[in-house]
Image (cartoon, rainbow, N blue to C red; front, side, top):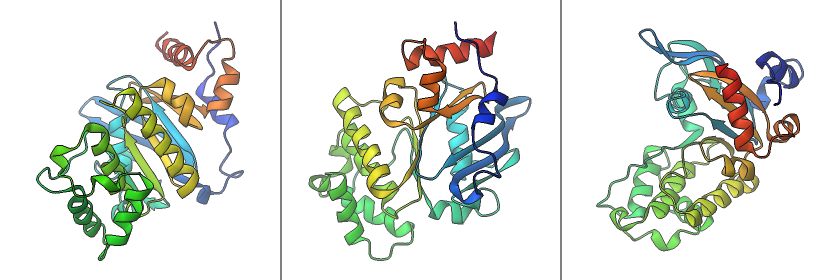
Length: 266
């Protein structure tokens, strides 16, 4: 059995504030918390994500992953702590944060009676793009989804809706894209297509990815850094390569994940 690394040991291996300038972090939160009465959905979260990373945020159902994303995307105000996304304060500069992020929730909401193009045009204008036609076709082409443009949302499959959801989330060219359980409801082919899109968004457009997921197999194929949340507390944070080295005797990322969570419970 691998001995559990403490959070202090893990954080020591990460660059210090002096070693890495603040501007290199697209997400920088300190002691962030969300409480509902005596219940802490997120507890004292300190986390930094560098520009250009694909960050995988792991945890069991109810661990606090979605609550964290809701705070980082300014949909939910923290109870305490502070945070910056794309260099702007998530509480005091929420409008600036929203201009610089994209967000794909677990269940994408569109106007079903409108076409994919009409939905994208509507949401693009809400994002401040006055004449979005060229951007719409550009993102549809990038996502290989031009053929969906004239179809009503109600006629699209889950995978097709996910592509239009990503198109809506990146049409304003965000610095960071937040994905909340993006593979939910997709078949294996749809999961692979989404994985390829995430990798291309990162490598070709330079978008930082912050992804909540429970599919460990996908993490090994997409993510450069992982964090593990357990009952609202961050119990592990490191690069994927360092993680595989630290737990080299474990057979898979699933074994590593269970090791980390089980040791935390002990």
